[in-house]
Image (cartoon, rainbow over all chains, first blue to last red; front, side, top):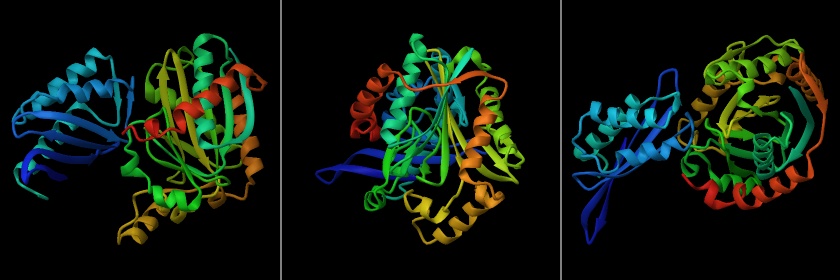
Length: 116
Length: 248
């Protein structure tokens, strides 16, 4: 996990946090989040997983943007699962639950001040 | 359903991926036959999965220095080093309805054709979900699939001769102090035809053709002018572009 602050005039304004997991029996998933200390600004999900239809990933990333960073793991998971359902998406090698865990881990790493 | 078999060809990475997409469009439009194709990559290249980060996966400087291309696939999955002489790649492009609806089930069907082919050179292979084929517990084939516009595209590689150290030199893994350990570990996980038996590459190709076409109505065919023209367009506008390859 990695967490990097971005600076304007020496003052951190956004935090960029990363987390990754090799899912047991599944695939590698990497998550990069940017937040402003209150809300998630953007999310990027990468990895060697499969997702059909592929375009659903962009919708999953968008669904995280705007969420409070102190939302719970089940809330992140539920938000992502709704997108999966609405897009009739099939995830192979990862799941909304795994992604939710990564979101929480990434944010927690930032709060712990790791890698600043 | 009558299949078209397009015999082993050699193209660069961009053309290889562009042909897959051009034929997928043709199958969707009803102007292209369901297709089985075999090909190799010249120059050697690294392909990355649709969802992978180019910067995270490929050592671009090492690729440039060695004249190795890189390309983003339309399919998910991981980064693959396609050695010009070290593998045979295939693509299956056909209506989605011709295959089981379940993703793993459809991998199992097409990977079964590879397993039949490998049996033809005396190798006992098995499907290992999600998308691998193994021989004696080691990976010999990786496969990736997408379904768009009612068309299923599955492509994959069958390793003929693998040099793990060379493979890792183009990927972002294995660049740290554990490189030797990682290479040793990868050599434990990956195998190739040359490591398993004495079959030549021609014998492997012949056996794969039999495995893929057995029990099917098929004819040996060529690309149509429309397919070639569209592939050329896609190669230039998409697969060789930074916009496509660096999108993640």
